Length: 125
Image (cartoon, rainbow, N blue to C red; front, side):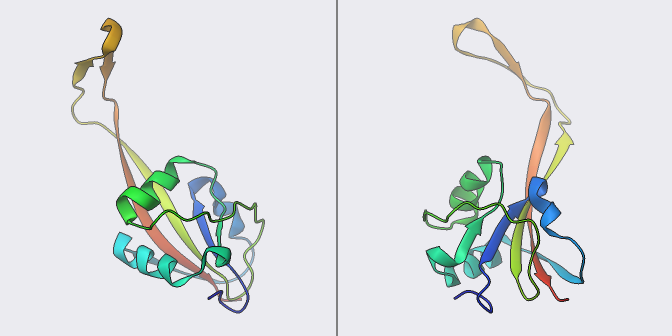
């Protein structure tokens, strides 16, 4: 179910450049809403445009989208009427820095918290 023949784009912080000239509508959305929208589209109607492979884990393990083989494609500009779901990352310093012992005797220290949130972006003009 591509919108007007345009595939749904899945993007992240590093691929926000697809938002070029034009007017856009941007709305926050929950993981459940993102899942519902992605599930409406057929596998051939969704493009993975993000570069961070960790987003795959977010989409499957946290958003709850069943694993499908969405093609990867570099997109330079969104088309009028095209929709994208942005998986945006917010990194904050950790308020605590616990240290844990790793295999082999090394120690690891927590230094940051990573948060993911979703936005739906539609190009209007």
